[in-house]
Amino acid sequence: MINYIKTNMKRILVIIGVLVGVVILLQPSGTKHLEVEHEVENGVPLESLNKISYEDTIDLTLKEHQDSITFLAETFQINEEILTEKLTSNFKELNLAESNENFDKTVVDYLFKLEESEKTLFNNKRTNGNKDKDYIVKLVKYFSNIYDNVDFSIAAGIAKVESGYTSKYMLNKNNIFGGMYNGNLIGYKNIEYGTLKFIKLLSEGYFGKGLVTVEDIGRVYNPMINESGVKTAKPTWVYNVTLAMEDFIEVEAVDTTLLLSLKNV
Image (cartoon, rainbow, N blue to C red; front, side, top):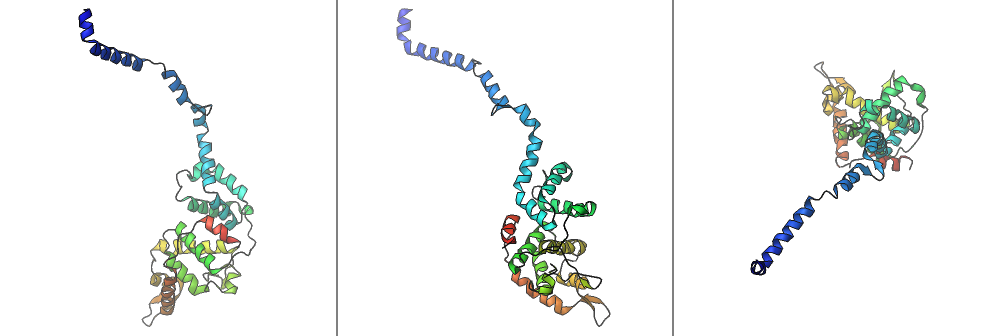
């Protein structure tokens, strides 16, 4: 036996080593520690963390879109704290957690409804702000992105033909598109709101009804009766809008962070 052990010492040591390793691996010594580690995070039981996760979702979502909330509160002239409270209390109904990409559109739609149901929350006094052409074009770009069925270049082209982005008479009323009511130019409370109403009109009254070309839009927006007695768009208007559109082919995307930085310049 002794001779056998001496002869096979290396093999025996290998076997012993393997057996020891297997025993160590099978030991449950780290199991409890692992369970505790997974059950507790930063000293707070995960069960407790799960209970406040929905509140965290609300807080994180609103913070992520803080610039949009600020900009849209100023656009509609509603107190930002009140708007934030409204969004918090209606978070689930508005499905804000699932509408990350459409957050701004969801809030805009909500604000238009709120204007009807709680008018006293809004200040409708006409205010002045940045009415620089480049800023207004960026507003058109931003709101055309929210109402994504609207062709930005057509919208920008129409506004250029109607106001040139420079008409003092129209800009004093925060109206860039020539909108009329009872024969009078419509006045809006600020240039942002007036631009929003213009894009909303195009979205719902034109593009949303299948009027998607300059000619289609012109039949309603700037019509005439031709020699055959058919209602059509004024050729001069169609030409001018089409020509103006070329100025807006390469306008970059705009967000509310940029708009806020330019708003009061």
